[in-house]
Picture 1 (tube, rainbow, N blue to C red):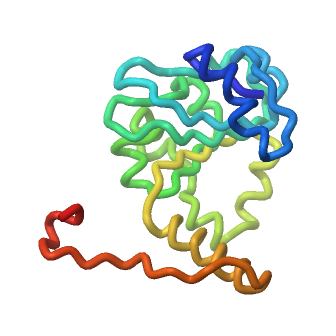
Picture 2 (cartoon, rainbow, N blue to C red; picture 1 turned 90 degrees about the vertical axis):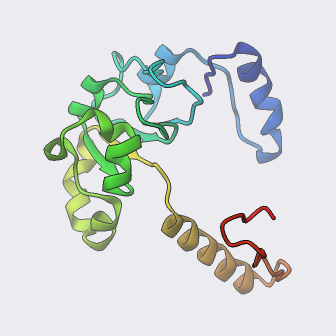
Length: 176
């Protein structure tokens, strides 16, 4: 199910992802809250214009990947949803500055992603309760994902190796 603040974007989304072979349909936010086990928010909501998810009809064990908060004062989820969940940031300091965690005190933020990866047994009790992954994105995640994709491509014998390194003349201007 997909929703968008712009109805035209929502209507065009199933066609844009048709190549994936998924059964995608446009739905209202209330239906998505009521019926989803996993919700991903990846919006361009403006500073001070959130939240985009009301949170009134969420399942008690829903998991939310909150991706769109990337500026001070910008958030997608209501404070009540965050306080009723275990909130796991990818990078604590960054999430406190510009993620959903900026709405919480330090004590209200759960363990970070690296801690749960190092101690997966700590995540087991969270399976039956509401959880939020506050993804502000940082380079280590990209590096791990990219390295995994390279390994899988090599194992499958697919892909071409290309150089992506760029050494600009002016290190302070990578676009030079």
